[in-house]
Image 1 (tube, helix red, strand yellow):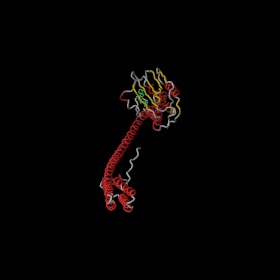
Image 2 (cartoon, helix red, strand yellow; image 1 turned 90 degrees about the vertical axis):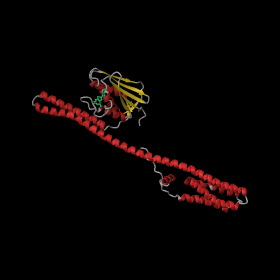
Image 3 (cartoon, helix red, strand yellow; image 1 turned 30 degrees about the horizontal axis):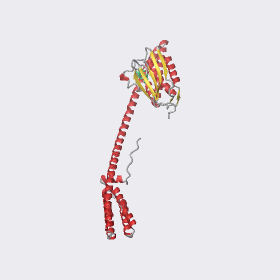
Image 4 (cartoon, helix red, strand yellow; image 1 turned 30 degrees about the vertical axis):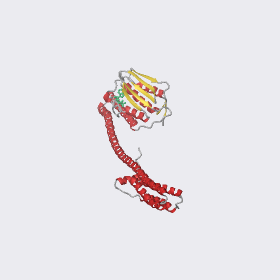
Length: 383
Ligand code: ADP
């Protein structure tokens, strides 16, 4: 979260200037007293030092610049002018009394008084300009912080609305997915009731009930994987073994005519992650690939070295994903399959994101689909 803009100190000169701008004039008596004391002490130095000690008079004469410059910085050009005038008024009688016989020296002292005015006014103008710039910056910072607060509140509102709509979608999807097997079980139960002593029919209906229960069970397992993902256990992943396991598992259940191929770059960078979860990801994608090819074809599992990580591709020669489905396939419960749960790709997306990676889908030039997983983590770079 960006740091909240710090409030200006109520007693700072900028705050005083802001107050002055908004009509609240607070007199800075402390600064006025300091300027007056500086001028009075310097003048006392002149009046009480014997005229023969010219070096000391030179020091005092320059000391006047301190209260003049301080007044100019604190009160602007008006303050510088007023302090220079006060110093001039305090110093002039001393020049007239003490140096009346030294015309040339007295003229130099009057010129010095002129310099008090020049330095006071110039320093004051510069200080005024600087203060104005600071006030503008403070105003801009205040405006920016107001805009930031507004943005944050709208962002929170959008996030809340998004969460509510996601919960609604999830509930609707879940209801839809549960209703179908429930209807089948209900129908089967009725059949079972009417089956009497027909063992064939009884067997058939019990099989239906079992199948639908298994489907509900699968749905709930996927839903829990999706809703309560566990944190990855970071280890070195044996990628070749993961790909072999997946090919082995899917190979057994896939229809005839589907061939699986593995292709790995030599000297692949090490992958850090949760082997079990990554197996699940590649399994889901490979199952989808196999299911997209009822007529058979080739599925490629490719692991490639990338500039700053590792890419894993699952490429099939299936029917492909229609353009209008492309931005829905990762939504929970989106499915085009008779017995699909629509949670496979949601789980893929979630696990890959948890691993700091990303997942992309593209349509192959000839036919079929390619899912690409990219993992930036290489051995030794995980948190
Ligand atoms: P399910 O497999 O249960 O339908 P998924 O989330 O895994 O759920 O997939 C969502 C949908 O994305 C699928 O129903 C299918 O329409 C589409 N899909 C996913 N992978 C592929 C693929 N390789 N080829 C064609 N369509 C796919």
